[in-house]
Structure formats: C-alpha cells, structure tokens
Image (cartoon, rainbow, N blue to C red; front, side, top):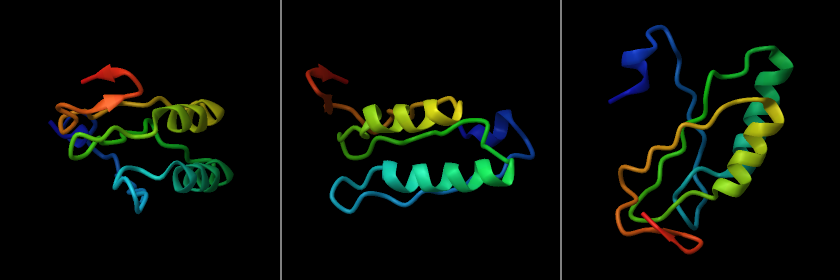
Length: 89
C-alpha cells in the first residue's frame, strides 16, 4: 500500500541511497530535513525501505528524525531473512 493512497495531496521526497547498502543514507536524510526545517516545511513522516534482506541503519535514521520531530514509518517488506544487529526479521 502506498502512503499517498491514505494521505492524498502529499508529495514524496526521495533521499538517495548509501552506495554500499543501497538503503537510505542517513547523512543525506539529515541534510534534507535540515533544508526542510529552514523552509518551515518538515515532512509528515520518513519511510525508509529495507532492501534485499538488508536493514536500514535505523539507529542513525531514528536519531536524525527525532532531532526534527519527524516520525519514522518502517517499510520492511523486502527485509525477509535480514538481521538488524541480532534480531531476525
């Protein structure tokens, strides 16, 4: 299910991936949220997507989002078999 279906009128903003993990780059996320905060237009949520059984760096993503007060909606649809530290998905 796409978030736009539940929240019409929203505009997705894409954050580029980390070259090694192919998941959302927390450094680029921080830069984008800083830009949005300066413009007074923070997003309603951030939705990182786990890919190919590899989890995103949630420790950094949550820390960045917490600093700006933006909730995280995890999309773990492609995390089957992946591990985040010692937890299996």
